[in-house]
Image (tube, rainbow, N blue to C red; front, side, top):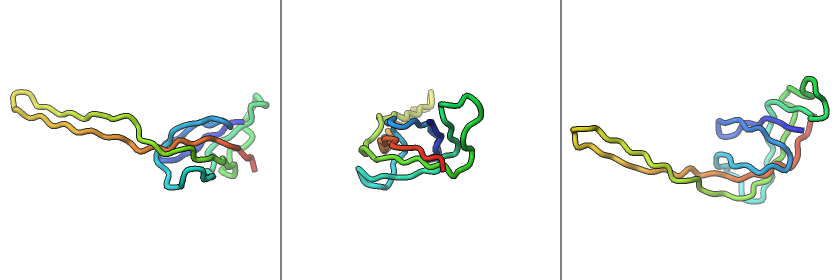
Length: 103
């Protein structure tokens, strides 16, 4: 069983038991969140997906909140003595996929 969910403007291919990092969610650590599946299918059948409707639901548990690696942004214009640098660390949420329900 697998599904595709959307969160934080990105789409993720998920399988039950998988742990992945997504854009920060506002819910607390340990909370269970439900996402609508954009697409889902059963691995038992080799043909078309079982459900292509958004009625399939994916239940995830929030494992922890963290920050991603630091990204350095550096700008320079040659022969103009212009240099500017800054950094950014994206806030992430680590989630564990608990269950995929095809309803």
